[in-house]
Image 1 (cartoon, rainbow, N blue to C red):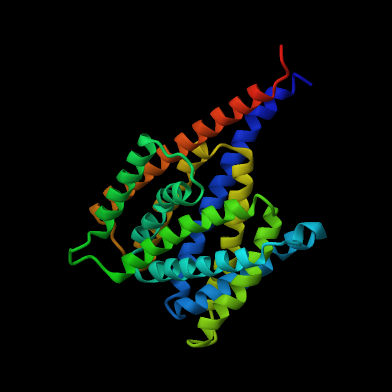
Image 2: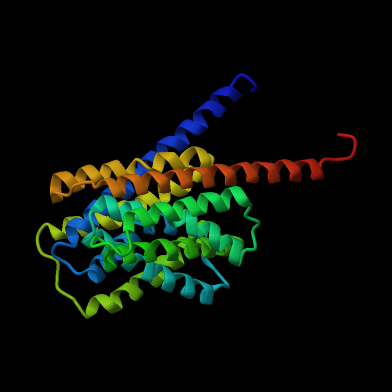
Length: 308
């Protein structure tokens, strides 16, 4: 038994890294598919079809879950969480459809900054000076990309930033829901609310997708859902601080796609701002993982029997 232990300890982090890389690539492909779909469809429709096909992709997992897992006593909380999530999704999709891909994705990486702030406000988590400094640095990176007051500033940039802010609130809500409900329950009710919620605005701009647009909206749903599932499993196997840098691979992927397919150039402000944001994220993830290990160690010490 002991001979096999090192193999497990070596394999698990590698598997987690592989899952995170697959998740990152999936989210990158989803962003590219959303951009392509947005060329012929309104953002509201793209969001609806992403949710519809996402639900279809995740149904086999949900159908295999135990019936007890799919019950909840938190329906009002799910409604609020999904309403906020819907606005965040629409803002994010709008940004992907109207901003250079690299700029839109760079701004979405600011979400952990707002998660830290939301955790301090709503969960009363203690955030010390080092993490606040990382948050401040992340804000600086956002300002470098958005450049308020310049000719490059646009409402589209604000949409991307709004998606990131609301994404931070959603992360806290999911954390609260997960104290009672399983991951399968959260996924089920999220999609159960998202599909009709996204259908309502889509009906006001409805036009049936034509030709290759079907490929892009199906890809957005399947790869978006696949990315979420892979990301969840990666975080179960590995540490956030080790896996977070892997997610940054999405940025060069979409940058190359933007250059090849949409003739977009990568300006220096986006590069500098993205580097600051990614560095801030990496430090926040490192500090959170370090604090989690300290708490786990303290709990283990407190729970040990006297004399052990």
